Amino acid sequence: MVEFFSSYRECKLLVIHRNDANFYEGLPTNRDLEDFISTSDARYPAIMLSKGGSYYPPHDYTTDITIGRLTFPGVPDVNKISLEYGKGATLRVLATFLPLVHA
Picture 1: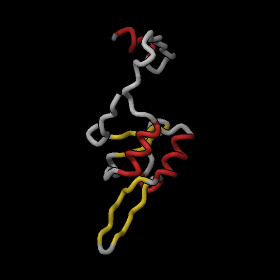
Picture 2: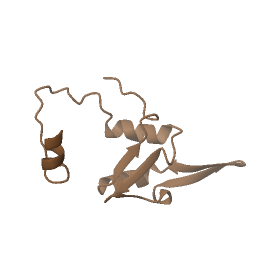
Picture 3: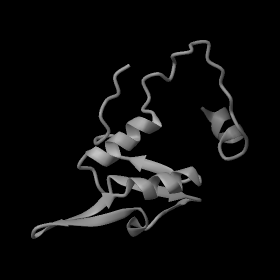
């Protein structure tokens, strides 16, 4: 662990080759994240975007939806999130909201 922090963290790439082709099979895919964002009740701040060490303001990737007399703030805009993700933004989703992916 000490070697990682002294030699690699924020210094250079660390590549670990796996002999198991299915090693990462249980991790969520981009499609899993898109489905989750567009169909769940998770909103800002459970879903946040960041880039370059700082978080985007929520209005850059969320919207407020009003139904009748109720307003739901911080609803993720999948198109805006996808656009920023494609430009290198990082999507942060609280683990308590992310469903388990079945391998």
